[in-house]
Image 1 (cartoon, rainbow, N blue to C red):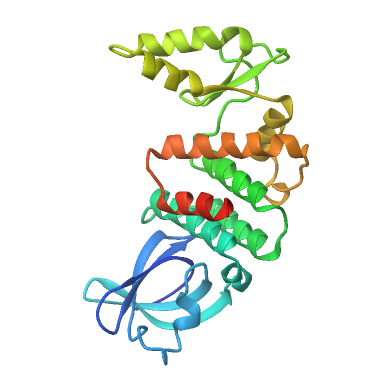
Image 2 (image 1 turned 180 degrees about the vertical axis):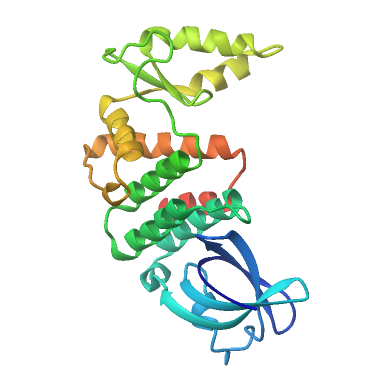
Length: 268
């Protein structure tokens, strides 16, 4: 039986001397791994369809417990991403995140839409890379079910506190007055906390501006086609980028090599 499916290429893995395994993110089946016969040859007609970041339409057939690619048609390859090392690093980070969070038979239409929109934004310079990265991280957090609470202080309920902090451990905001209470409650859940651990925990409840809170609120509440429809002062962008990255990575509980690489090339 033949199966027609569209998929975003997340990863390409050598399988044999002539074949490759292609990890696809699809709307209908989530993440699937398919075999691409003869694609380690430069003469393979499938090569344009299976490059990382490519979005293609495939005809698959099943054999020996595997899906094999019979035909492929490239829809979009986001070619401009490959012309810049920083763009390449950011796109690779997005794909590593998706490879980690998407599972087989997991229908994720909106997450795939976010991925494609994010790659398009990188390729076309729609917004600065720091904004694209922050939007992807926070919107992905929403779609995966762990969006932060930024509406009011989690302790006293105030919306208009003179100072606001983001509690990374809890994924919510607390006002400046409740910061120490938040830390003491967290310490109480631990068997013992030494001075070094106290400093580390304290660094995870940090001040944010009202502009950052409003940007996060916008990203997690706006329609999918409006995710870049916000502006903020340049001075607050680094703080937004930190919060969005911290929140996603903390929830994933995994060290991401592509994220480290992105930061390395961004510092050049």
